[in-house]
Image (cartoon, rainbow, N blue to C red; front, side, top):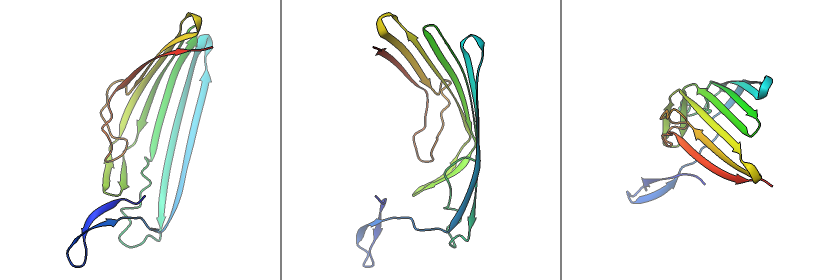
Length: 164
């Protein structure tokens, strides 16, 4: 569905106009995704990931160069450390995202660089019960992940489950 906006007709009366994208030209994209996982003794595990993304606009339509954006950061880095042994399973994750420009309809601007930390823990109780904790954005780093979107803060969820 195309977004709509208020406008004026030729005679000055109000109209609801549909706004839609067209082809802006040819865009070449390139990138690299690297990931490493490792298991350490005594139940420890870790991972590391890196992503690089780039693009080049070929023969852009005049006036649209600033609107052709991938809405994606050039660099992203993530690391995770976890432990699983006996009844306990935990993970601590860090993610850093480079600043990038965003353009979707009226939402155009810079998504500033941000870093987040997440924590998860699960404990298996007797008789198939599990209790879990998931804290996204552990240190409450207020940030956007899309321009014009919500300012994200900490979110904590506690869960109770049953396995059979």
